[in-house]
Length: 459
Image (tube, rainbow, N blue to C red):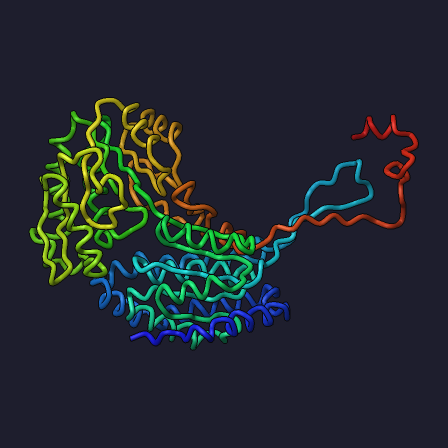
């Protein structure tokens, strides 16, 4: 089990990293590349321990752990190892004639000491993926794993401590009082993944020192199934996305906007898809994850009372098991339609016209993801008339698997984005630099502005 970091140690850890950053050691591109290679080697070396810990904490199978955690990290590192020297190089920019004789460039420089706070649902990926960006940018990092997955947190601490010195990358363990102590310190950038409510806490703390932040939050991500959709395929992909990690995914389909004409067909296809994914009894499936805690189980199970379970609905408190469920007849003001579910229960909201579905989305906070299953012209209308952090047409979840696409929220679902080059920029300052030659000093800009009419024509 994890050993909590004494709160009195936190100021010293952060101060040591500030001191180390000021040595400029991390500015060197080769240093960053070596650090990324060390991290990659460590992830491979600890793969079994990490996947075993994920099973112990979440009942996450090796296959799901590798696909949703390990493989994404390795792909991200490989992308940086291939492109970082070019991405981080100074970018030359055009200089207008009025600034002759000068040249212009943008320098990508590290912000400094970063704080990365990770959640429990994808505890490996969502801690180490931002770290990859911090290392690539030349920052140092203080890492805060989630205490709700103690086996994973303990392995992550050993992985980091055997790979990096604490002055460069440090792990701090603890609960909310530890978070409070961490947020009292001064950083150069904060990266937080979690709920909108906790995101506001982080943002208030960062505001005290005007520290830049990246907030990767959640919200209610809709899945639209229009009458023009391939209904069977939509049901299959939504069932997969909703039961991946037992729905404990920030971009899981959170509610279903279902065209009334295809409801019967969709429900039958969803039931069939679940059987193909998890067997006749998902409780016996080796690939079906459990709720992370008793509290999470009780919260998600309580939603089952807010409608009729037309697919699934079974629970087992001793195992923290909730069967994949389609919930019908939910009242518009029900908690399940107001709160982020973070579980395998999917409420149905019927609609008759695609503009009604669009209006329903627009009446709510901007989601982290939006999924639309429809013919191209209908999908284009939905995407063009709504806003979300990311979106998929005729798919769910998979946009996060493309390391060439940035990932992030908008409005209530977050700010800032990462993955690939965007991770580099999230932990960097893009510094504009103008260098003017000294071999000539044109007089036009100086008072008393001689030849102003000529200068005015050049501007």
